[in-house]
Amino acid sequence: MNILKFIETFTDDSLMRSTGSRRDSFSQFGNIGKTLAYASIPFGLSTIANKVLAKDITPTPATPIGALQFALTLEYLENEFYAKALDSGVIPASENNGRDLKVFQQIAAHEADHVSFLIAGLGGTMSANFVPKPTFDFTVGGAFDPFGDYPTFLALAQAFEDTGVRAYKGQAANLITTPDLLTAALQIHSVEARHASEVRRLRGLKGWISNAERGAGMPEATQAVYAGEGVTIQAGYNTATLFGAAAGSEAYDEPLGTQQVVDIANLFIV
Amino acid sequence: MKNEVQIHEVDSSLNTRRSFLKLSGLTLATAGLIMAGCSDNDNDDDMNDTSLPGVRNGIFDLGSGDFGVLTYAYALEQLEADFYTKVVNASNFNTIFNDIERQVLTDLYHHEVIHRDFFKAALNGALPDPSSQLLPSLTFNYGSMNFNSRTEVLATAKALEDTGVAAYNGAGKLIKSADYLLLAGKIVSVEARHASAIRSLINPNSKDFAGDDIISTSTGLDVAKDPSKILPIAGGFITTQFTAKYLP
Image 1: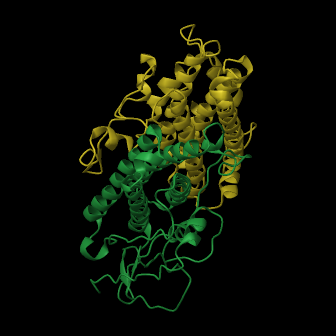
Image 2: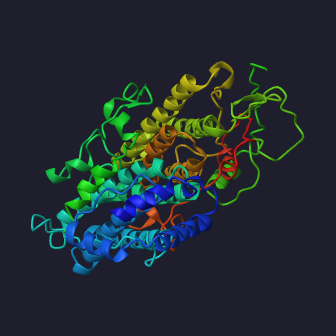
Image 3: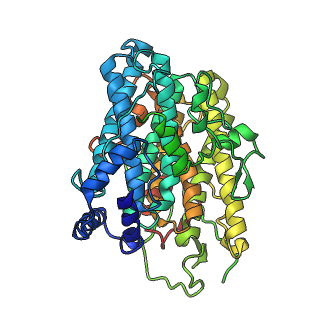
């Protein structure tokens, strides 16, 4: 936590005004790591404090590094979720003539790539900006059985993908001063949206979110993922005028703030 | 400053099968509009503030900065809205598409028309002088594309949606206002949901919804392209001439 605050003071300066290439941006992260080291921050203590005090994740600062750290934690969650599902055999090989298995193998591959990409973006696992993978419990203390019950797996997959879309969108403004990182985040954001759309279809839903509906068969506990999705006024324009509120809300995905996403993710972090 | 917008109709005789192939990504030759850097030694005396859209030397230019990006998005949304309007109004729409496909295409028609009208309203409200600075309604020509062909409609829809995603992904970094960036973000993920849906209709039992042809197999990143890469693609269908000299 102290480190995050410390980083925040740096990101207000040169990093925030970076207009260099992605490589430049990344090497600047490396420099911040060095600066931190010179400043003799007690990393070891801080790490221990995090382990003892904070199993739940806490909101990352509204900075480019914070946004990447936040994204990495979400990608850890998705990556482990799909890897465990593929290992568990919960996805029936025969489902939809094999379609579902192909879909989740592809999604799993993308989430693994996103984890690697974001770790590299933060300067590698030895960087001061690196955040480790939390410990996940996708059963939420035994309430869900996603690796034994396929419909539960599908429901959580939809919730995670729709959350991912909203979470990246909510971080965009934190990356506005680092154009290359913003572009990369947008390039992940649209992949999450392609995933979300497909998972929703596998569950028999439209690929887009109507009003603030979580959709048929979704546990009520997932409603937080859809809170506020029913907006029909965009920059003063009423999107419901032409074709009604459902179409108007479908045409725009809404962001989630850092705290909202942290609250959702913490359900699955022990 | 001229207030008149000159619309130039491009000879559509070449703008046929070739345009369709172009949009499908098979070839990137030629374009139906004048591109940035293609010419020239124009002077821009008639409009020195290049951030504003408007007519320069007789041709509408999208401008730069946030207005330029919004106007660029408005042009692309005009194309998508026009395309799906023609799709759902085609004579055989109810027979060549099944129930699920009609639902998807009708939803896309709704969403894209809403996006188009939203940008028009937003620009009308934000531009200092919309009467001279609002991009006019564009005209389109799809050449020999057959709107009663399921295959051709879906292939073109796929190209349009993938292009839309790449365009918004590439334009995000050009936006200076956090509010406009968020609005673009709200739209681009819906375009990506569309692209995924169309790809699934074309090849349902597959990973094409986020296929290796479009998502990097090393980074897991989608495509992002600058306006100068997008406009020659989209321009294959746009017959109204405009320029984008001040966008990258």
